[in-house]
Length: 450
Ligand code: AMP
Image (cartoon, rainbow, N blue to C red; front, top):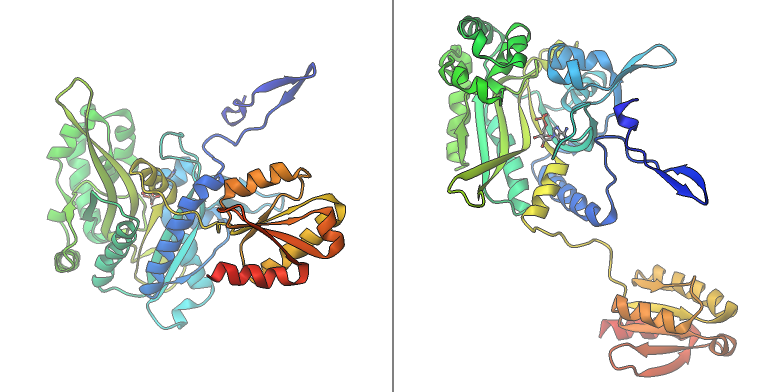
């Protein structure tokens, strides 16, 4: 049985078994109470991105598989293990997008953005797909918000990119943010460093975990990324990329760090940060939220780190996928992780659903018809109004009006509907007055203004 299908409970209804369909493994519904978090994050991110001159781009959720194979690399975990790739009925090889930088770069080339004024600054937001082992904060369909800058080689972009995301997270009221940076050089200095690293790792191969022994042959830099306990002593003695950068990469990284100092951004160097995709060059970075917790009955302090976003420079990507030589820099943040952390930190955004101020209660078919029309008149004036047209009992409608904490309930009984009048009930005092139906919207609007 496919593991994605095995969580389908069978429920018996009236003797007949009935399947209850579940979300596929690693995917989730976003219910209204959660969507307010997403909306808040989108709003803040969009506002900040707009402030820095970024414009929105939307690319399809499917792309040619080859785009990712070329940009990310065949031996990257994303392409090798996590990509939802398939052959269509027409014989095309497509993939559900696992990340947003390659599609943005594809669009930069296809849409001739190299003819636009440079740099081109784009932002995107939407679902991405990776076939991962589901665990906390790791989904198979997840949302990302990303920024990309094409056509600017200056290291100031790298620093500003980090600053923009930092501002977004600060605006969302996050504390304890940790920025980690590293440089993985360019293809020429990295090739030399890779040789050094492989030579070193080969002498310690038996001390590496199974995965790293494979990585040693396919993608040795990824060994530096390994979280397995067993590999930590080997990693800690390994040569470091920043000690072997060529002059240009070294100068670039030095400038990035100087800009970060100038911006007073708290960062730390992490020589093990590699990010594992072929298209990255020079600066790479990740931003974490760090929390410390004392385990119960133990003196030991446990530090938990959750990666909220990651990115870096990709000066060769556009060329790798068939475009002109165009430098670039970008990053993406994971929305689910941010929502999770907002919840843990008790950061609750306000719902964007407007609180109704008026409730229309009705009795009888004529009352319902007139109530329906009245509702539209309030809508035209943009006055938030609520109703429960499906209910016929006045008592239950008043109970709902009470619960909604509206200021006024308008009661349209059969008698009022026939007489062309309506009762305005002020909910706080319980005072009621009868007015002409055609005047009620104006009357209530002026009462609300007071
Ligand atoms: P990456 O480029 O893979 O580092 O992804 C950037 C950010 O997206 C990460 O820091 C996470 O916050 C988020 N992210 C990546 N993969 C997943 C996933 N499978 N589920 C949820 N969030 C993810």
